[in-house]
Image 1 (tube, each protein chain N blue to C red):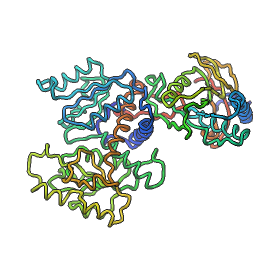
Image 2: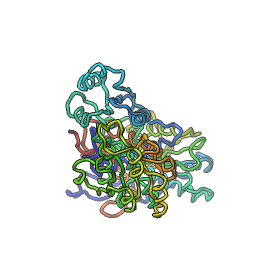
Image 3: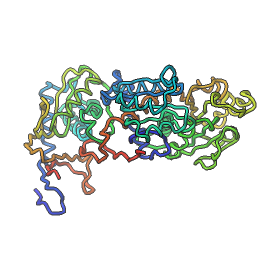
Image 4: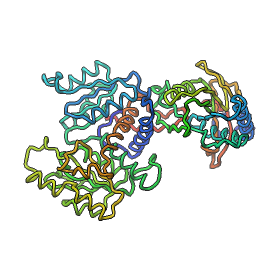
Length: 341
Length: 195
């Protein structure tokens, strides 16, 4: 792995390896000294062209726990607002010898462009590009789901995948990079994915995705999903009338108190409610649902740091020029698969 | 001693057989108890992968001498991957689990257990890893084989066998808990010529 750009080209083996490494990183997060020296002397740049709180601080915490130096770059207040291009920004970072660039950009494909252009030698991590992908969010969702699934099955989570799990993703799929990344990753890991949302907020070509689409949330809940992932209504990307009113959206597509009670009525005792955050309480999710014991919102944030530590570790710790099998047989080594674009 | 056949690959000779390994571990277990004047505060931490089964075997032997000891409660695993100084020289390695005994390691007598002591770099990494996990009273080192060629000022307290080797040779330890060779679990230490 040289870059992490999307979950669509992530093999099941690489995804599982990343989740297994994240398990060990999570164990570090429970220690008194939450620090590892693995990335000492490496520089990670957080290049954020779009607002973000949790993703940026999550990446920052992850890099710092691995002892990397972190440079935060926000487009606001930088030369980007003076009109600097992505290329010039990238070359500036290259001149400052960044080892990894974590990029969030409003344009779909900007991280891929950065990785393939040759402007910069650093590893590129996609932290959300337009309406395309947000791979580390999907990985932390998969990590959370895997731990839940293992707990339900009474097994240890390391090494297992999501076979047999049914995950329902609800809401604004059209604008959601989280939904796209999750559809690819969860299917790769063996889960069955269901989508539910108003037809106006489902993308063209959704029929070709490896999932079942529902146009009624209660019908979808009757399919007895093991997890319900509520998406944020992305008002900032909505430049057209996608639904009549937020009140109607909330009634038809929101996870409200009635639907929370419906889970109990259906006997779905082990079904969890997920949300990538930030939540619009009262719109796509009610406060009772967000704060219920079924909610994994805070676990997702916690797992985000572990998953991002694993990502940075796997991208940066090893020899970047040596893809051969390791000679030292005392340690479990998997051959990195060539995914360099 | 087997005569190498052409299809057996690199030249290979067995230097410790199953009974030799068992005798060496029995002696080390007694040495540990003697040096510690009993089993008080003892914690055995195996370095993955083969140090861990060796630590378990040592704990069994210690428990056989001192019935007050529960072998599971004094054994743990210490992964040192993230603390290695050669991470950049190899493809990325996946870290393995670190599991400490429930009593922790603070103010304990920690015996690090590994299969082969060579450059000493793994032990250096283990000492760093240990410092992030707690503050033991004493740290000792027990190895099944010491093959020399130290690159750091590190010495083992308990050695199963001193094995003078050439750095062109490779010492392999096979333990039944981990290693299946030709479908059967084996316990042996072999020296191979590096290909």
